[in-house]
Image (cartoon, rainbow, N blue to C red; front, side, top):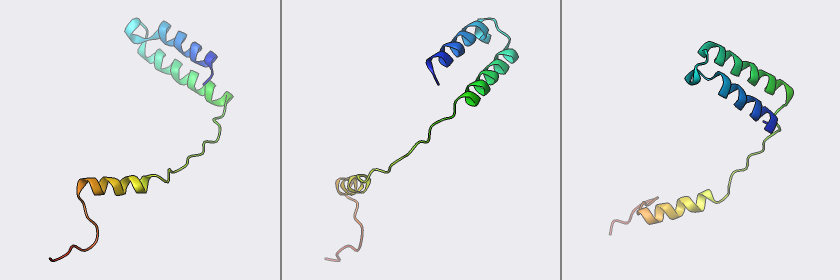
Length: 76
């Protein structure tokens, strides 16, 4: 969302919000219209996510500190 889109949305909300005397139905319809206009103009970029390889060692440390064991216990 660009700065211009945010400022347009903010101006609309300030002018038409139901808490400030605006019509609730018109407010919701206006927000939907703004959302549709913003989504048709700009497409979101492809987002890549990566899994951290540090989760397994952190899990091992948590198990060690909490006293949990895995595997068979000694009968001694």
